[in-house]
Image 1 (cartoon, rainbow, N blue to C red):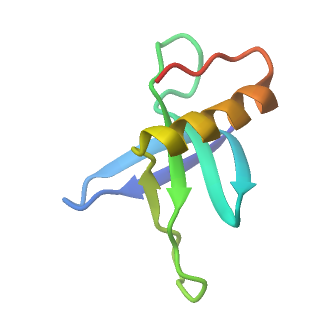
Image 2 (cartoon, rainbow, N blue to C red; image 1 turned 180 degrees about the vertical axis):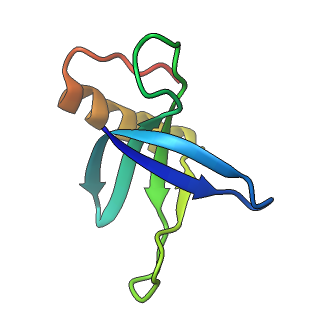
Length: 87
């Protein structure tokens, strides 16, 4: 499982673990959790890549639009088969 470290607006580092990734309508999306294994009750988030093509670093934002979140969640549920993503 790939671990990514994100830095928020306050400069705080946050670790996420990539569960799956996909591309929809030219945008990359990541399904990430905040725990490395299933022993904890991890929180899952869907992140959207908002980077410009010329950017040196990726810029991801948490998807918060309900319609977009529902649609992308369904795609990840199909990809992972036995996973139900609750919003």
